[in-house]
Image 1 (cartoon, helix red, strand yellow):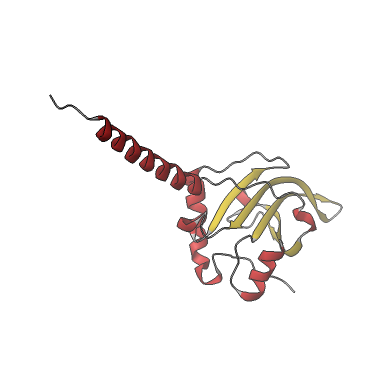
Image 2 (cartoon, rainbow, N blue to C red; image 1 turned 180 degrees about the horizontal axis):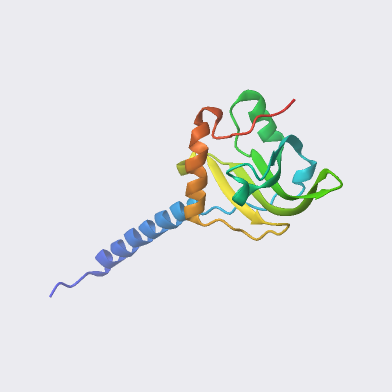
Length: 167
């Protein structure tokens, strides 16, 4: 029978603790929570797009799309490189028609991108989140966040950002 000495046992415990802390740190970086972007409507308005019923994207993303950028993100639009702390908000609203006018309806969702090169190293330095309607209820799973990044890889040359700032 193999008997473990007190010093060997202590060494094993320290090694396991170190391994546990490393795993927890890696997990925390991958699951870093992106906060709801309070006050984003006071940020710079980047642009607006209307996705109508003729679009193949209408079923999941039909409506009025407003894009907002905080000061760091605006710097990224100007230079082509988004610094840490950049936040881009994609505000999707339903549309309603009245007397020949297309008007903003209820908020469907809010998509948020946050630049943190260390916290989101595996996804080009960007974290992704989606909030339901006017709430801070999170909608994305880790799998969906991976899908966000996979799509945004098409814009790698623009630091993974699709939108362009309309001056």
